[in-house]
Image (cartoon, rainbow, N blue to C red; front, side, top):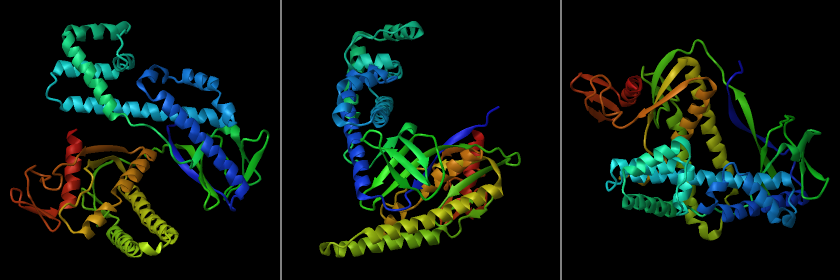
Length: 436
């Protein structure tokens, strides 16, 4: 039986600066790649092209017949990748539009439950959604047609028209004009490159010619790559998607609730702490960024450079991220969880506090910590259960009643207990996850 895998992106870098002439050739490909994507956005992002989006071969044939590729002189290995990348963006936008319409309709008190059911049916069935947006009659087949007939029998024609108009109106509001304004890189198919001589050879717009870029490693891959360009630094960054085998651990059997914090990075429901120095690192980073912003604002008239600032900021972030990953690895090795209960919390806010505190909260790395934790759990076959985080630090984990929080200590008068609020939150996360 084949083992499960997941996709992970790694990076490769050029060993020596890319010659100016070669960088110009790469930039020319990136600019043409951008033009192709914008052409597809402009031509196919409207409702009239909904029926052509899946699977997309109709659009591929129309783009071939358009003559744009020969006009730009762009090799097919880049041209069709740009077409399907733009189609992917269009499909993603339509999915987001449908999700937004469904959410708004659910909050609309003017719709009855049957009307909401009919509206969600139209959003779910692509052919019906296409017909509604293009003001056409809905024609379905098989079981979908029977379901459609049943639903319209419950609604009169005026209500159907009202729902159709609502969908069209909300779609116009939610749709955003897609456009890419920067030529920063392009995708590369496996036919457009080869690894050789401790580097990579890339196809360019000139026939039977490739440019050579020495790399810092000798690894070779066969997947589709993404080449990101930095012309001011004369460097490139290659993004390589690889499949990583998911590991199984027979000794990972614990069920653990956790709580993320700004001083201590992670606390378990048993009170064990990981990342005790996270607050120190984060405070140093936040104060340094704040001081740099203040200094830059005062000296902006002198047009000071920012390159040194960005380099140091990147080093500070890498130091912080290295510590986060180190502590997450230690947490997983030590606790050996089978199931992890993680509170799902809203974005951090610090309204009413001082500017210094607000700025520190804004730079909190909670999103990075969650992303890395989820990725590592997927790689180790650890199940993550997200639970509602409302009142998770204010509600007693033993009796469920609301208690008091003061200086990081939670007090419940009913149970006569006092515990750190982050431990109480972790215990609540585990309790709520177990109930699910």
